[in-house]
Image 1 (tube, rainbow, N blue to C red):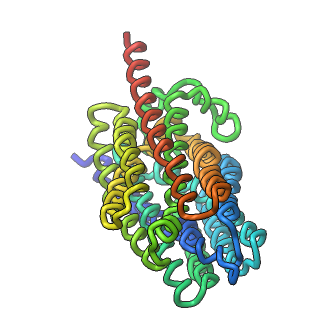
Image 2: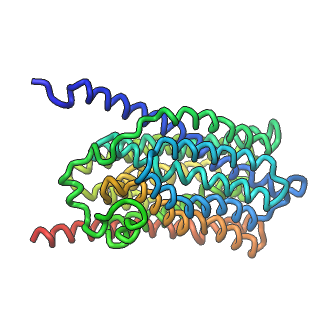
Image 3: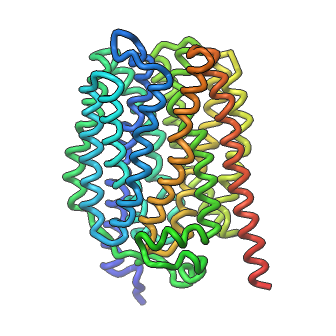
Length: 434
């Protein structure tokens, strides 16, 4: 007897789902190339012969993108739960691409700040809506792996951003790096116009939706934000994610400069060396974390949080060691271990966020998550680290001290919050059952 899973309609839905995953992941790759091409150019932009920026100014430019990204995400999240999503995503891709290329025309601190801020507007549309679209293409039991594939673009795109930026700067100058990184997005925006937008909640089991805390069961859009504060699993996951993003964002922004200034790497070696670490650990860690999270989900509904908590608690002391080890080979292998553990959390944590709310709130939930993790995470971290380094001498020793002050403790805090949220959820469920 034929089943729904064997029907032509089901086969077509699977084809649409695979197409959406491939297209959105590929575009997310360019999302992160555009985001991280700036980081490798920091030491070049400090030179008096280019823009003559200080560490403090570099921190503000890095944070400007995140501030705009975070503040505009709730707007696009609300629109994403109420309107057609393909056109919204396409508009975001076009805007961030233009913003990246504007960086190539910068003549000083303020013009570079403006260009990077425009990038934030475009990425807000994409970052808040694309994961919600994928959650409507795939059932709950597959979302950890699916989102891990989608978020592979973080390490691969970041690594390509480092490598592309360094190579373009070396061969053609720093302005060329912004032009080459931004231009492909305009073509990709046209491709997105053909992306199928699935019905919201079509892949969800009604019993899973009914189990979501009552406080979150409001309509999508602005009223939903009030409900998120009463949804403890959601808020605990997001707050842990904010601490995680603080540490990971600081490393992503400052590590190329740390390798050059503190450990004596050239710009090309720093970009290529750290880029290779990020891409390998990102591919392995992100895929392994998504696969393992889905496997563990068969045994406990809090598997995603337990996995994220354990891996970050192990990564925190290793991050401290990596920032203090002087031997280059040992230091790079330690960074390798840190990045591998941190990327294992990516798919599981984002799956936990999407699973903690009802289907008609998912774009809004992702948008609110983006707002929280960036305003509390990688918006303040580049600024704090840059200004503490500037105040202590704006040199190698000050940068190392500033990174040690902020990065390992924030990673440790993320692990503690995620473990506490998972344990609280377990006790709450036992109490309710009793």
